[in-house]
Amino acid sequence: MKGRIAVIAGDGIGPDITQEALAVLNQVAQTFGHEFETAGYLAGGAALDVHNTPLPEETLEGCKSSDAVLLGSLGGPKWDTAPSHLRPEQGLLGLRGGLGLFCNLRPAIMYKQLSGACPLKAEVVGEDLDIMVVRELTGGIYFGARARDEAGAYDTMSYTKAEIERILRKGFEIAGKRSKRLCSVDKANILSSSQLWRDTANALAGEYPDVELSHLYVDNAAMQLVRNPRQFDVIVTENMFGDILSDEASQITGSIGMLPSASLREDSFGMYEPIHGSAPDIAGKDLANPIAMILSVAMMLRHTFGLNEEAVAIEEAIGRVLDEGYRTADIYSPGMTRIGTGEMGRRIADAL
Ligand code: IPM
Ligand code: MG
Image (cartoon, rainbow, N blue to C red; front, side, top):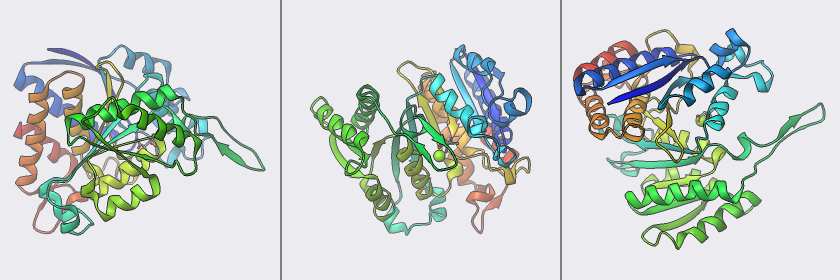
């Protein structure tokens, strides 16, 4: 098959891990006989440096005319003092909003090879932890009105019923294909938007009789995730709660360097990126773990291109390299072989 992919390597370790992800994609193309045309675009700090905007028009248009977007990471201390609308992160929000990517899938899967890297006790986590966080991505407080002056500042968390309904439906559908348990996370004891969220979830539940719906307040959910993560299968929640809980869930699996994500809408288009940030302190030093980015390629092959066999091949290749004891610094443990970003990418491509 043929596919067109917009590639935004971004800032910090973004270019390091993107290079390895593209090498793996290339290997998939060769092994399975596909053609992927890639085009690079600027966003975030890299775009600010050249165009004085974190999201040039040309980047958004390039993404719109592609089948999928692969994104490394955006941001870094160099741009931290910029006014808030000129921060690299606004490039990411602009992409998510501008492309209509309301549904963010963040799988937190524990690799058995890395169980030693998990900070929780083995009996709490078990061997095969697999949690899917479904995060609403284009609404809520990250997109609401905000302002700041001498006297104070405010941000607004607002949702329409339609926005809540479409993400909850995704949650129900995904849960229906997995364990049939859906945990909706909100703060309905305080927030109006959360009360609407909970009422909407309850109203929809009747349409998904095979899925068991439960609710948790976000503070309790944060506690339960480390107290007894095995109670969770699919979590669906609004934008900011999902941002926070997915970072927490990632630690249960050992390293945030292992977690990919897919940002989707109703058609097959999607943007795929690791959930970690740009780690500027280790950028360009061959230290970053490229696995989250390579797993993001697997998610892209599966969701946008419907290439499940190819996605599984990547996931298995990663498993084999981990079986052989190769580790980047973030997942290193004594007795393993420590390697850099480039070698990890190469070994995964070779294992394919
Ligand atoms: C993430 C990141 C982003 C977010 C930042 C960089 C804007 O933390 O993808 O989780 O908050 O969504
Ligand atoms: Mg985050």
